[in-house]
Image (tube, rainbow, N blue to C red; front, side, top):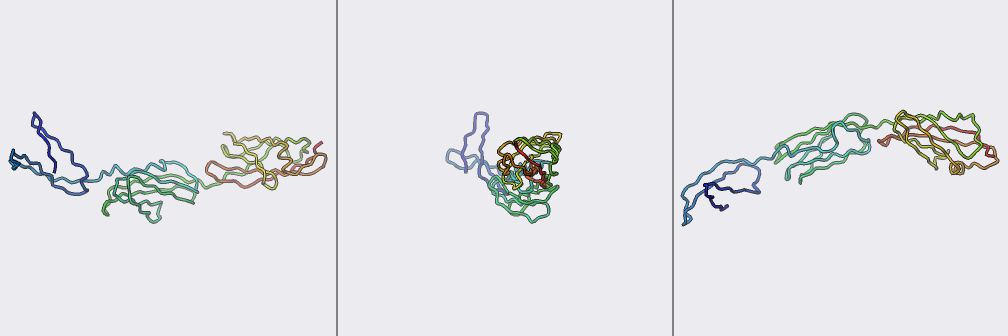
Length: 239
């Protein structure tokens, strides 16, 4: 019970906290100086969970994600249960303490929908859906447009010019793929990498000896997808 005083205008206020979800009867009574009830009024009141407490924060609507990791995260009412369903997979059940979080791995390429349902005592309170896309498609392998593989390299500097998927990271590698140099392709897909003496040394090139040097190129997009490798072999004769 709560005790409060009536103000000069005849008004009074009591805040009830910690009421359980479900129906309640709330009564207010006026007592005299002997603490005897002079008047009483009761009302029926039901405490419900606000369905707006269920929100999906991640993934964001229409966002794109790598196949290897997608985070589903949001808010829910305390002491409820959430079901998280990815596409048509079985529901993942979690008790809610204000937040829910679930990680998904190795999702397929394309569109996906995650559905989150909040329940209290087995009764559905609210359901939310969020659609997003997984990009698991590898970019095209980069192409070296210059220099031609018919060009003999005579100095320990090789500037490669080529094309790749716009925005992808292009790697130039030694023939054994142990040494890597990288750059990002421009918005129009063009890229340039200059390989210096360290690359020649890593490739086993010795000055004064005619040989061949293989340069391999590959591209990786922003979602971790890696292209096939293209290889270019150049005649080398360092003076």
